[in-house]
Amino acid sequence: MTELQKISKSLVRPVQDPCVGDLVTPVNSSFLIKFLINQLPVYRQGLSPLTRGVQLGASFGYILYGPFTLLGPMRSTEYGTLIGLFSSVGAIHILTALFFLYGQGGGKFYNPLPSPTVAQPPIELFNRSSWGDFTNGFWLGGCGGALFAWFLYTNAFIREIYSVFFG
Image (cartoon, rainbow, N blue to C red; front, top):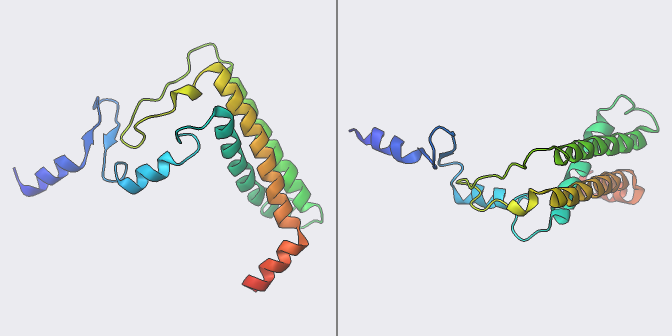
């Protein structure tokens, strides 16, 4: 066996069942990637489902506001920022409805298995009552995140500060 074959065998190997396709690689098993993934609201230990939903929804609402405002069909009008807010809140409503429908299915919830990146997935999130709390938190955080982004974008004082620092 050559040195290259020894290195390639040690770099990538299956976690449990090789048929599943979950492999240990230098990317997904590195300390930095594990730390970043485990700090996401869905995987962070010790959070309630409502808090997970609020944090995830706030980031989605905040991020969705920009494309709807700057790239939407009404971007050049005086109501472009308000229409961007309504569009992002509408998208949050659609996502919340999809989360609700997922929670109403008749089957069992999918319980994620431990992986090389996430050693302890949050199993307390995957039941009906916890998923309902997560969905409510997502809606609240999403609408709040979009409203916060709209406030920052339309506030004259913040625009003045931005122009002072960034020309």
